[in-house]
Image 1 (cartoon, helix red, strand yellow):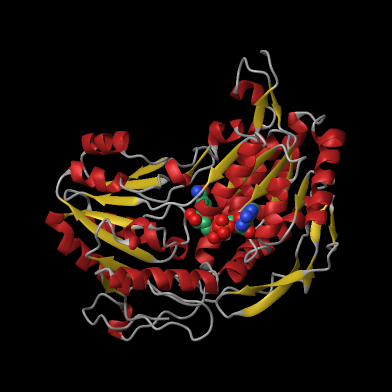
Image 2 (cartoon, helix red, strand yellow):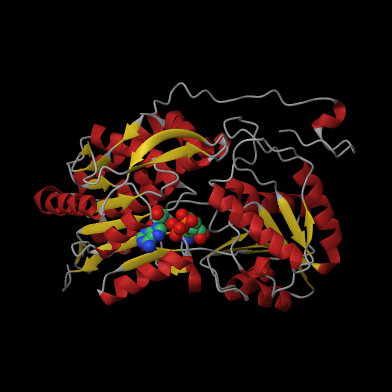
Length: 496
Ligand code: NAD
């Protein structure tokens, strides 16, 4: 969809030039009519016979039917993981486990286009992001952890560690394949077996990954993938033979899971929501900062736990910065996620669209001013335009609650102390961004910001070697790097 109301020479349309559409072909993707549960190396039916549809959020057309795992099915999956742990995985040398992880990584690279198109169809994200971010990073996570599988004793010298056994993993819908990779790769590298549940609106790439796992001849039962919604997730959480839990999702569900894990003294990592401050000082390189802010909030439609959703801009440059930001937003292309020119794709589900809409309305009622560009949105599917709310007070809901959509909330500050106070005034603590030319100010801010990940003069940079995780209501535990590995090992007593 072109944006067309800026007639100041800043847009191609001002010159009567329109991008030709460049829609990625779907011919590589073979979506089945129905998918079973991946248990013990095979796709199987549910004991209950229940299923649900998964659809393309950009058209609302159903893509496939997916099996809903009952608690009996989850029990089958956990038992398969438990048997496989004892029979194969626990005994296998790290170098052999590494071979399987390398193979998975290579298959992901070889089938990258197919995976990227499927991710975009099922989730609504722009193809340029699934192709250039989700897929390369997912493969990188398997490569990185393959490298560790036979070196764990060097990663944690003088400690005698062992895997937990069966790990239960539950992931959200915003980065379906990438979150599966973040969870599976370290768990397998450390010698655990897994029962993983993808989110109910985006199960297809995890099921394609199950095919890869079968194709690389991973011993049956090492990875089991069960599909379903909260009830299926809860059956994993409550299963008595699961020895460790890893959850990425909302803070609300995270708290439920934490209660259950504490009751049973289960090791747990929680990667939850966020409301990241993105702080722009007056001396920052403004053009770069604007690109950073755009990427920070509109990447993946703002369905990003670490999205820079609260812009804190120094008062002296605020009017100029917001003006330039709005001009830049006019140029963003919202529409068909499969078009390689698209910047902002579809909202993942109707429920999420309603939540975004409700929160923006609440912001306006509380006194915020709203800016939306003049883009036209497709008739079918779930869409929300890139939106900026100014005149926001700290007490407003939009300044405190995670919107998880393409909505930027703007506040101003005068001094670094005020910026810091506002930045930290949130129940969350996942990420933050700081833009300034002064290295000393970057250090001053980063030492005091209560966020697990802080980017300086950039935003949304991810790397499997770098630990990622939150403070406060954003969760605990880290994924990536050696910190991420540590979560999948326990002390077996003594020293090596
Ligand atoms: P959600 O909590 O509703 O769902 C996440 C997963 O949990 C889904 O697979 C869902 O089926 C399952 N689930 C739901 N209820 C459950 C229950 N009672 N027991 C067990 N499992 C249950 O979250 P969502 O809406 O899918 O994802 C969005 C949230 O995830 C946002 O808050 C976002 O910030 C967060 N997130 C965090 C990170 C991070 O690394 N911190 C990364 C991505 C997303």
